Amino acid sequence: MKRLILLLIISCINIFSLVAQDTLSFSWSGNYEAILVPVTVKNSGKAYYMQFDLGSPVSMIYTNAALGITGDSMHNYPLQFHGYLFQPKAIPVKKMAESNIIGTIGTDLFKDKILVIDYPNRKLVFTNTLPATFNISMHPMYFQQGRILFPAKLFGKQGVLIFDTGSSAYSLITDSATAVQKSVANSSAISSRAQSWNQVLTSYTYPSNDSVTLAGKTIPLKKISWFSGVSQAQQEPMRKLGIMGMLGNYIFLERVVVMDLKKGLWGMVKAG
Image 1 (spheres, rainbow, N blue to C red):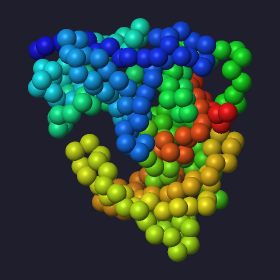
Image 2: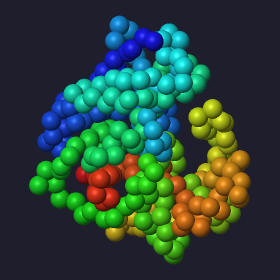
Image 3: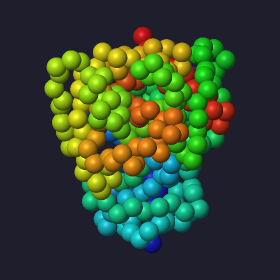
């Protein structure tokens, strides 16, 4: 099988005074629908991307006949992020409709790293240490089975929220009853179609005046969403574990989020 070396195009601008290979620039698909990292495929002049998805415990490549990506997995497949080489013994290949998005960057790439998402400047930074001058209060978080969970206080209750950068355009995703109850009175939902892998779901989003407390800071939700097609049987196990919902990127758009996945600590600071 043809082996392709993926070279990520990154910017030299670095707000954390780290070396250049630790920084990836990203762009948004549509209206904050997905975080995309540009990819240059060797011997191809086309523009390709990989989606940055912390909701996926495993990085993967999508089938693409034009690039020779077929089968169920690729072995010793090199993904080179500028100066950082990620080369798993086997990387899954997922069958998807062909497009210029040719893969997913999951949490396995960062499991032993400090990961910084600088939303205002559209930068991803991964490193082993932060500069001593970087002043941010760090708080406990959970990194379990490749999932990121933030302790939170939501609607007067303590629990945890899953952080999923793949749920990009949303602030908080919860169940339908909670979304309606915590929406602005007499407001109407905006519905939209959202694709979760090969499944198309419908989301319903309301304006909300409520807030959530995360890492010692109270942040306005601004909006709250729920998805059709998710059964009570699917939601109940999460409730029993104290999982109150899922956070997307929207709630952090004005902030820099820092996660030490190895130590289980995180923090955030509002930009500007």
